[in-house]
Image 1 (cartoon, rainbow, N blue to C red):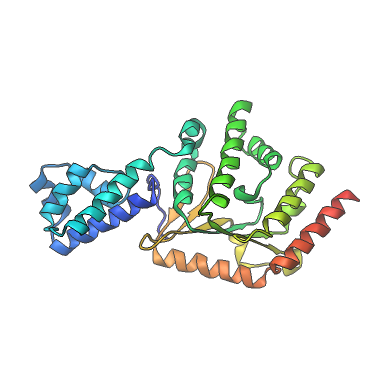
Image 2: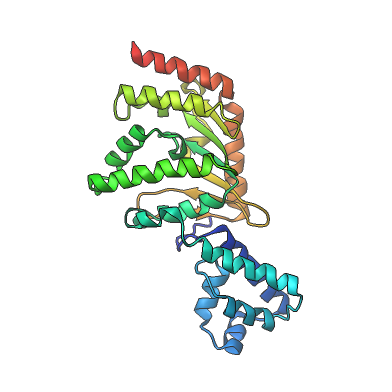
Length: 293
């Protein structure tokens, strides 16, 4: 399994730029060593640029395009536009929260999520962040991140709420397909009142045109999602999709075709055996009423 433990690419544009530059170099038959020698630049820096681990400058890219024999002005402009777009995306709304985001690479995920058009999210334990209420988010973060002070917890709660406004609202909202295990609803997070509000939000979210929510009932028994949570992020062509796996200290992303096919197959299987969206809304409402008894 191709686990990427280096820094997550900082933007969709950087991933596109990395792929374009590698493609152009491969077409010439030049190695990274030969390019580095001819341009008198550090080979390690070039490698990180081609891997999407760091950005670059228009000056260096123009030199690369010259070396690769790219003379067509439109092709050159397309590549240089990616450099500028990547730099522009390095000023995200979440930068002011970097102190609490960087340790777990959550800022890396936000950069990827910001450029995604479709999010397929499976959660066996918790409500997905994009669908959490403020009180639910506060209860989750405060209990899972004991290392954080109250102000830091509140900062992450604000990040979560801004994520929802940014990705599920606006002029170009992402398409979210969330599949939850029934355990998510049966675990009391915060309080009964917090759970009631959270279930109400899930029902309302499932009625939005860009959001689909499905529930895996306990009666299903064992299923392919028992390995754990994951998110499949889909990006505009030609940026390749990827899978994100969140861990306490070293969240990772998978981008090989084999990994994508594997997780896509699992998600498709979960979709097929989960309750339909309408059945899910009915079941959530039933479980909410049970809390009141």
